[in-house]
Length: 60
Image (cartoon, rainbow, N blue to C red; front, side):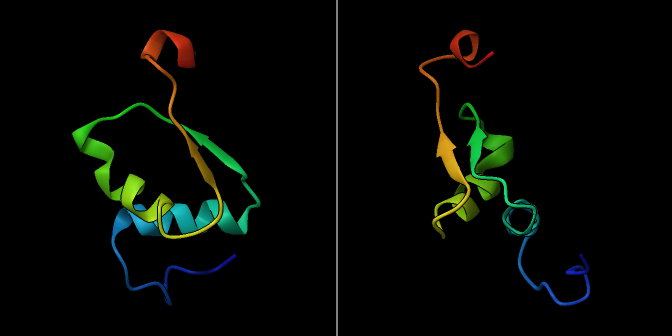
């Protein structure tokens, strides 16, 4: 799976594109400023679906 020489977006978008190509359907995450680019990229397509638990302790 080579996309690094064709992808022109930001790092979060690159990660989400790799997850899509691997067939990942769900991503579990809690809010944080360090991952906003990933959240933005997850909102741009149907998969993977972002699942946000009510708190860190419930997402474990």
